[in-house]
Amino acid sequence: MLKSYMPPASRMHVFVRQYTRLQFDRERDESYEEKR
Image (tube, rainbow, N blue to C red; front, side, top):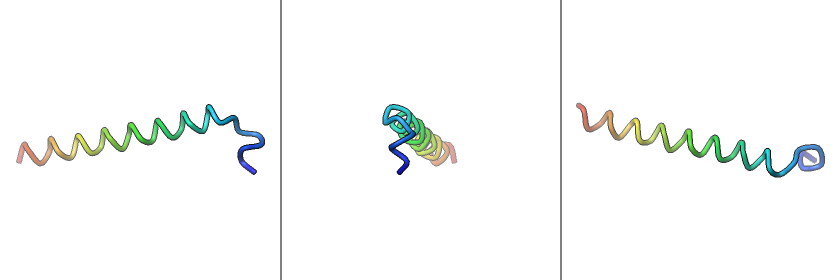
């Protein structure tokens, strides 16, 4: 249903954005652990 009016490119863009945010949070957490 979503695919009919939402182009796959934009869905991929949202997925990539969420994935990069996840990676950024993980790196931030690791650096925080090192600083303690």
